[in-house]
Length: 376
Image (cartoon, rainbow, N blue to C red):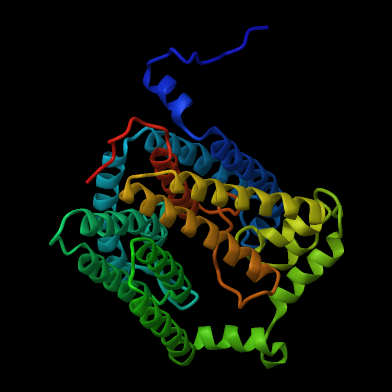
Protein backbone atom coordinates (compact mmCIF):
# COMPACT_ATOMS: atom_id res chain seq x y z
CA UNK A 1 0.00 0.00 0.00
CA UNK A 2 1.41 3.37 -1.01
CA UNK A 3 0.81 6.65 0.78
CA UNK A 4 0.86 10.14 -0.60
CA UNK A 5 2.91 12.61 1.41
CA UNK A 6 4.25 16.09 0.88
CA UNK A 7 7.87 16.62 1.85
CA UNK A 8 8.97 19.71 3.76
CA UNK A 9 11.49 20.28 0.98
CA UNK A 10 8.73 20.44 -1.64
CA UNK A 11 8.87 23.98 -3.06
CA UNK A 12 5.82 23.66 -5.30
CA UNK A 13 2.81 25.91 -4.73
CA UNK A 14 0.89 23.05 -3.11
CA UNK A 15 3.88 22.01 -1.02
CA UNK A 16 4.45 25.52 0.34
CA UNK A 17 0.72 25.82 1.01
CA UNK A 18 0.53 22.54 2.94
CA UNK A 19 3.39 23.40 5.30
CA UNK A 20 2.24 26.99 5.95
CA UNK A 21 -1.55 26.66 6.18
CA UNK A 22 -3.28 26.08 9.53
CA UNK A 23 -4.07 22.40 9.03
CA UNK A 24 -5.98 22.07 12.31
CA UNK A 25 -8.36 24.86 11.34
CA UNK A 26 -8.74 23.30 7.90
CA UNK A 27 -9.50 19.91 9.47
CA UNK A 28 -12.17 21.47 11.70
CA UNK A 29 -14.01 23.04 8.77
CA UNK A 30 -13.79 19.80 6.77
CA UNK A 31 -15.38 18.04 9.76
CA UNK A 32 -18.21 20.59 9.75
CA UNK A 33 -18.73 20.03 6.03
CA UNK A 34 -18.88 16.26 6.60
CA UNK A 35 -21.47 16.68 9.36
CA UNK A 36 -23.43 19.00 7.08
CA UNK A 37 -23.52 16.38 4.32
CA UNK A 38 -25.14 13.83 6.65
CA UNK A 39 -27.64 16.34 8.02
CA UNK A 40 -28.68 17.59 4.56
CA UNK A 41 -29.13 13.97 3.50
CA UNK A 42 -31.41 13.54 6.52
CA UNK A 43 -33.45 16.73 6.12
CA UNK A 44 -33.30 17.26 2.35
CA UNK A 45 -35.78 14.60 1.11
CA UNK A 46 -38.56 15.85 3.41
CA UNK A 47 -37.96 19.45 2.28
CA UNK A 48 -37.99 18.34 -1.36
CA UNK A 49 -41.27 16.50 -0.87
CA UNK A 50 -42.95 19.65 0.44
CA UNK A 51 -42.23 21.54 -2.80
CA UNK A 52 -42.93 18.60 -5.09
CA UNK A 53 -39.47 17.93 -6.53
CA UNK A 54 -37.21 14.90 -6.66
CA UNK A 55 -36.51 13.57 -3.12
CA UNK A 56 -32.78 14.11 -3.58
CA UNK A 57 -33.16 17.58 -5.09
CA UNK A 58 -31.40 19.40 -2.24
CA UNK A 59 -28.88 16.61 -1.69
CA UNK A 60 -27.81 16.62 -5.34
CA UNK A 61 -27.60 20.40 -5.46
CA UNK A 62 -25.47 20.43 -2.32
CA UNK A 63 -23.26 17.81 -3.98
CA UNK A 64 -22.65 20.39 -6.73
CA UNK A 65 -22.11 23.34 -4.36
CA UNK A 66 -19.63 21.62 -2.04
CA UNK A 67 -16.93 20.75 -4.63
CA UNK A 68 -17.22 24.30 -5.96
CA UNK A 69 -16.90 25.66 -2.42
CA UNK A 70 -13.85 23.51 -1.65
CA UNK A 71 -12.21 24.63 -4.90
CA UNK A 72 -12.87 28.28 -4.05
CA UNK A 73 -11.52 27.79 -0.52
CA UNK A 74 -8.36 26.10 -1.78
CA UNK A 75 -7.72 28.68 -4.50
CA UNK A 76 -8.21 31.69 -2.22
CA UNK A 77 -6.12 30.13 0.57
CA UNK A 78 -3.16 30.01 -1.84
CA UNK A 79 -3.14 33.81 -2.18
CA UNK A 80 -0.82 36.18 -0.35
CA UNK A 81 -2.27 38.93 1.90
CA UNK A 82 -1.88 41.68 -0.71
CA UNK A 83 -3.79 39.66 -3.28
CA UNK A 84 -6.47 38.82 -0.71
CA UNK A 85 -6.86 42.54 -0.05
CA UNK A 86 -7.19 43.33 -3.76
CA UNK A 87 -9.69 40.50 -4.24
CA UNK A 88 -11.75 41.86 -1.35
CA UNK A 89 -11.81 45.41 -2.72
CA UNK A 90 -12.87 44.29 -6.20
CA UNK A 91 -15.40 41.84 -4.77
CA UNK A 92 -16.79 44.49 -2.44
CA UNK A 93 -17.35 46.90 -5.34
CA UNK A 94 -19.14 44.20 -7.33
CA UNK A 95 -21.35 43.05 -4.46
CA UNK A 96 -22.39 46.61 -3.62
CA UNK A 97 -23.59 46.98 -7.20
CA UNK A 98 -25.39 43.63 -6.88
CA UNK A 99 -26.99 44.72 -3.60
CA UNK A 100 -28.31 47.82 -5.29
CA UNK A 101 -29.57 45.70 -8.19
CA UNK A 102 -31.67 43.54 -5.83
CA UNK A 103 -33.80 46.60 -5.11
CA UNK A 104 -34.61 46.89 -8.83
CA UNK A 105 -34.56 43.38 -10.31
CA UNK A 106 -34.40 41.24 -7.16
CA UNK A 107 -36.89 38.47 -6.42
CA UNK A 108 -39.05 39.13 -3.37
CA UNK A 109 -39.29 36.20 -0.96
CA UNK A 110 -41.13 36.51 2.38
CA UNK A 111 -41.41 40.26 1.98
CA UNK A 112 -37.72 40.92 1.25
CA UNK A 113 -35.90 41.40 -2.07
CA UNK A 114 -32.57 39.66 -1.43
CA UNK A 115 -32.07 37.39 -4.44
CA UNK A 116 -30.99 37.88 -8.04
CA UNK A 117 -31.77 35.14 -10.55
CA UNK A 118 -29.00 34.38 -13.06
CA UNK A 119 -30.53 31.76 -15.31
CA UNK A 120 -31.03 28.61 -13.21
CA UNK A 121 -29.02 30.07 -10.32
CA UNK A 122 -30.19 32.32 -7.50
CA UNK A 123 -27.58 34.51 -5.83
CA UNK A 124 -27.88 36.38 -2.53
CA UNK A 125 -25.36 39.27 -2.77
CA UNK A 126 -25.57 40.06 0.95
CA UNK A 127 -23.85 36.76 1.76
CA UNK A 128 -20.81 37.80 -0.27
CA UNK A 129 -20.66 41.41 0.89
CA UNK A 130 -19.93 40.27 4.48
CA UNK A 131 -16.40 38.84 3.95
CA UNK A 132 -15.48 41.36 1.27
CA UNK A 133 -16.47 44.28 3.49
CA UNK A 134 -14.69 42.85 6.54
CA UNK A 135 -11.36 42.67 4.68
CA UNK A 136 -11.86 46.04 2.95
CA UNK A 137 -12.69 47.74 6.26
CA UNK A 138 -9.61 46.14 7.83
CA UNK A 139 -7.45 47.64 5.09
CA UNK A 140 -8.93 51.10 5.63
CA UNK A 141 -8.45 50.97 9.41
CA UNK A 142 -4.88 49.71 9.05
CA UNK A 143 -4.01 52.30 6.42
CA UNK A 144 -5.31 55.09 8.66
CA UNK A 145 -2.99 53.96 11.47
CA UNK A 146 0.05 53.33 9.31
CA UNK A 147 -0.15 56.35 6.98
CA UNK A 148 -0.61 59.69 8.67
CA UNK A 149 -3.22 61.83 6.97
CA UNK A 150 -4.95 58.95 5.17
CA UNK A 151 -8.69 59.17 5.98
CA UNK A 152 -9.16 55.39 6.26
CA UNK A 153 -11.54 55.56 9.20
CA UNK A 154 -13.84 58.02 7.43
CA UNK A 155 -13.77 55.96 4.25
CA UNK A 156 -14.69 52.88 6.28
CA UNK A 157 -17.55 54.75 7.94
CA UNK A 158 -18.82 55.85 4.53
CA UNK A 159 -18.62 52.32 3.11
CA UNK A 160 -20.42 50.93 6.15
CA UNK A 161 -23.21 53.51 5.74
CA UNK A 162 -23.68 52.45 2.10
CA UNK A 163 -23.81 48.73 2.95
CA UNK A 164 -26.16 49.22 5.91
CA UNK A 165 -28.50 51.42 3.87
CA UNK A 166 -28.70 48.86 1.04
CA UNK A 167 -29.32 45.97 3.47
CA UNK A 168 -32.05 47.83 5.34
CA UNK A 169 -33.70 48.78 2.04
CA UNK A 170 -34.23 45.07 1.17
CA UNK A 171 -35.01 44.87 4.21
CA UNK A 172 -32.56 42.53 5.98
CA UNK A 173 -32.19 43.66 9.57
CA UNK A 174 -30.45 40.48 10.72
CA UNK A 175 -27.69 40.76 8.11
CA UNK A 176 -27.31 44.44 8.96
CA UNK A 177 -26.81 43.44 12.60
CA UNK A 178 -24.07 40.97 11.67
CA UNK A 179 -22.24 43.42 9.40
CA UNK A 180 -22.54 46.18 12.01
CA UNK A 181 -21.23 43.97 14.81
CA UNK A 182 -18.22 42.80 12.81
CA UNK A 183 -17.39 46.32 11.64
CA UNK A 184 -17.69 47.70 15.18
CA UNK A 185 -15.40 44.96 16.51
CA UNK A 186 -12.79 45.81 13.88
CA UNK A 187 -13.10 49.53 14.66
CA UNK A 188 -12.53 48.72 18.35
CA UNK A 189 -9.47 46.57 17.57
CA UNK A 190 -8.07 49.36 15.42
CA UNK A 191 -8.00 51.69 18.43
CA UNK A 192 -11.43 53.29 18.67
CA UNK A 193 -11.42 56.02 21.39
CA UNK A 194 -13.50 55.11 24.45
CA UNK A 195 -15.79 58.09 23.89
CA UNK A 196 -16.71 56.75 20.47
CA UNK A 197 -17.17 53.26 21.94
CA UNK A 198 -19.86 54.64 24.22
CA UNK A 199 -21.44 56.65 21.40
CA UNK A 200 -21.48 53.63 19.06
CA UNK A 201 -22.98 51.45 21.79
CA UNK A 202 -25.73 54.03 22.33
CA UNK A 203 -26.28 54.31 18.58
CA UNK A 204 -26.52 50.52 18.28
CA UNK A 205 -29.08 50.36 21.07
CA UNK A 206 -31.06 53.17 19.42
CA UNK A 207 -30.92 51.38 16.06
CA UNK A 208 -32.23 48.16 17.66
CA UNK A 209 -35.14 50.03 19.23
CA UNK A 210 -35.80 51.80 15.94
CA UNK A 211 -35.83 48.50 14.03
CA UNK A 212 -38.41 47.17 16.48
CA UNK A 213 -40.80 50.03 15.70
CA UNK A 214 -40.01 50.45 11.98
CA UNK A 215 -40.05 46.85 10.75
CA UNK A 216 -43.14 44.76 11.44
CA UNK A 217 -41.36 41.43 11.05
CA UNK A 218 -38.74 42.45 13.64
CA UNK A 219 -41.46 43.54 16.07
CA UNK A 220 -43.33 40.27 15.54
CA UNK A 221 -40.26 38.11 16.18
CA UNK A 222 -39.25 40.02 19.31
CA UNK A 223 -42.80 39.95 20.68
CA UNK A 224 -43.10 36.20 20.11
CA UNK A 225 -39.74 35.65 21.79
CA UNK A 226 -40.67 37.67 24.87
CA UNK A 227 -44.29 36.49 24.98
CA UNK A 228 -44.94 33.23 23.09
CA UNK A 229 -48.69 33.71 23.54
CA UNK A 230 -48.58 36.87 21.41
CA UNK A 231 -48.27 35.06 18.07
CA UNK A 232 -47.41 31.94 16.10
CA UNK A 233 -44.47 30.06 17.64
CA UNK A 234 -44.91 26.84 15.68
CA UNK A 235 -41.35 26.63 14.32
CA UNK A 236 -39.54 27.22 17.59
CA UNK A 237 -41.96 24.95 19.46
CA UNK A 238 -41.22 22.08 17.07
CA UNK A 239 -37.48 22.76 17.26
CA UNK A 240 -37.53 22.61 21.05
CA UNK A 241 -39.54 19.38 20.91
CA UNK A 242 -36.87 17.94 18.61
CA UNK A 243 -34.11 18.68 21.11
CA UNK A 244 -36.13 17.13 23.93
CA UNK A 245 -36.96 14.03 21.90
CA UNK A 246 -33.33 13.60 20.84
CA UNK A 247 -32.00 13.46 24.37
CA UNK A 248 -28.36 12.50 24.82
CA UNK A 249 -27.85 10.05 21.95
CA UNK A 250 -30.67 10.95 19.55
CA UNK A 251 -33.48 8.92 18.01
CA UNK A 252 -31.18 7.56 15.33
CA UNK A 253 -30.33 8.48 11.70
CA UNK A 254 -33.50 8.94 9.68
CA UNK A 255 -35.78 8.60 12.69
CA UNK A 256 -36.35 12.30 13.33
CA UNK A 257 -39.72 13.99 12.80
CA UNK A 258 -38.86 17.68 12.88
CA UNK A 259 -37.57 17.60 9.30
CA UNK A 260 -41.09 16.65 8.16
CA UNK A 261 -42.71 19.46 10.15
CA UNK A 262 -40.46 22.48 9.58
CA UNK A 263 -40.13 23.96 6.08
CA UNK A 264 -36.65 25.31 6.91
CA UNK A 265 -35.32 22.19 8.63
CA UNK A 266 -32.56 21.82 6.01
CA UNK A 267 -31.42 25.44 6.38
CA UNK A 268 -32.29 27.64 9.38
CA UNK A 269 -33.25 24.80 11.74
CA UNK A 270 -30.76 22.11 10.77
CA UNK A 271 -29.32 22.26 14.29
CA UNK A 272 -32.67 20.91 15.54
CA UNK A 273 -32.37 18.00 13.08
CA UNK A 274 -28.93 17.25 14.52
CA UNK A 275 -30.31 17.37 18.06
CA UNK A 276 -33.24 15.06 17.34
CA UNK A 277 -31.52 12.40 15.24
CA UNK A 278 -28.05 12.38 16.82
CA UNK A 279 -28.68 13.90 20.24
CA UNK A 280 -26.85 16.26 22.53
CA UNK A 281 -23.50 14.65 21.77
CA UNK A 282 -23.45 15.72 18.12
CA UNK A 283 -24.70 19.20 19.07
CA UNK A 284 -21.79 19.55 21.48
CA UNK A 285 -19.36 18.35 18.79
CA UNK A 286 -20.70 21.02 16.40
CA UNK A 287 -20.41 23.72 19.07
CA UNK A 288 -16.88 22.56 19.90
CA UNK A 289 -15.81 22.74 16.24
CA UNK A 290 -17.11 26.28 15.87
CA UNK A 291 -15.50 27.31 19.16
CA UNK A 292 -12.18 25.77 18.09
CA UNK A 293 -12.19 27.62 14.77
CA UNK A 294 -12.99 30.96 16.41
CA UNK A 295 -10.43 30.57 19.21
CA UNK A 296 -7.80 29.24 16.82
CA UNK A 297 -8.37 32.20 14.50
CA UNK A 298 -8.11 34.67 17.39
CA UNK A 299 -4.92 32.97 18.59
CA UNK A 300 -3.34 33.23 15.13
CA UNK A 301 -4.43 36.85 14.82
CA UNK A 302 -2.85 37.77 18.16
CA UNK A 303 0.49 36.48 16.87
CA UNK A 304 0.42 38.94 13.97
CA UNK A 305 2.49 42.11 13.87
CA UNK A 306 0.73 43.25 10.71
CA UNK A 307 -2.28 45.39 11.62
CA UNK A 308 -4.16 44.71 8.38
CA UNK A 309 -3.90 40.94 8.82
CA UNK A 310 -4.88 41.17 12.48
CA UNK A 311 -7.99 43.25 11.73
CA UNK A 312 -9.00 41.18 8.70
CA UNK A 313 -8.63 37.86 10.55
CA UNK A 314 -10.46 39.31 13.55
CA UNK A 315 -13.35 40.44 11.34
CA UNK A 316 -13.64 37.15 9.45
CA UNK A 317 -13.52 35.07 12.64
CA UNK A 318 -16.06 37.33 14.34
CA UNK A 319 -18.39 37.01 11.36
CA UNK A 320 -18.04 33.22 11.25
CA UNK A 321 -18.65 32.77 14.96
CA UNK A 322 -21.49 35.27 15.13
CA UNK A 323 -23.39 33.61 12.28
CA UNK A 324 -23.06 30.21 13.95
CA UNK A 325 -24.13 31.65 17.30
CA UNK A 326 -27.22 33.32 15.83
CA UNK A 327 -28.34 30.14 14.09
CA UNK A 328 -27.89 27.89 17.12
CA UNK A 329 -29.30 30.41 19.60
CA UNK A 330 -32.38 30.90 17.40
CA UNK A 331 -32.98 27.15 17.25
CA UNK A 332 -32.69 26.89 21.04
CA UNK A 333 -35.02 29.83 21.68
CA UNK A 334 -32.23 31.87 23.28
CA UNK A 335 -32.96 34.81 20.99
CA UNK A 336 -35.63 35.86 18.47
CA UNK A 337 -35.63 33.70 15.35
CA UNK A 338 -33.50 34.89 12.45
CA UNK A 339 -33.26 33.22 9.06
CA UNK A 340 -29.52 32.53 8.97
CA UNK A 341 -27.74 29.36 7.93
CA UNK A 342 -25.37 27.35 10.12
CA UNK A 343 -21.95 27.76 8.44
CA UNK A 344 -20.94 24.76 6.29
CA UNK A 345 -23.71 22.65 7.86
CA UNK A 346 -26.95 24.06 6.43
CA UNK A 347 -28.00 23.64 2.82
CA UNK A 348 -27.42 26.69 0.64
CA UNK A 349 -25.63 27.74 -2.52
CA UNK A 350 -24.83 31.41 -1.93
CA UNK A 351 -24.17 30.82 1.75
CA UNK A 352 -21.83 27.87 1.17
CA UNK A 353 -19.82 29.63 -1.55
CA UNK A 354 -19.59 32.88 0.42
CA UNK A 355 -18.43 31.01 3.52
CA UNK A 356 -15.85 29.12 1.46
CA UNK A 357 -14.58 32.43 0.11
CA UNK A 358 -14.38 33.89 3.62
CA UNK A 359 -12.67 30.83 5.05
CA UNK A 360 -10.23 30.74 2.13
CA UNK A 361 -9.24 34.33 2.94
CA UNK A 362 -8.95 33.41 6.62
CA UNK A 363 -6.63 30.49 5.80
CA UNK A 364 -4.59 32.67 3.45
CA UNK A 365 -4.14 35.42 6.03
CA UNK A 366 -3.20 33.01 8.85
CA UNK A 367 -0.61 31.09 6.83
CA UNK A 368 2.93 31.27 8.19
CA UNK A 369 4.99 33.54 5.97
CA UNK A 370 8.23 35.53 6.04
CA UNK A 371 8.11 38.78 7.99
CA UNK A 372 7.18 41.85 6.01
CA UNK A 373 4.66 40.26 3.66
CA UNK A 374 1.09 41.54 3.51
CA UNK A 375 1.56 45.24 4.18
CA UNK A 376 -0.27 48.25 2.82
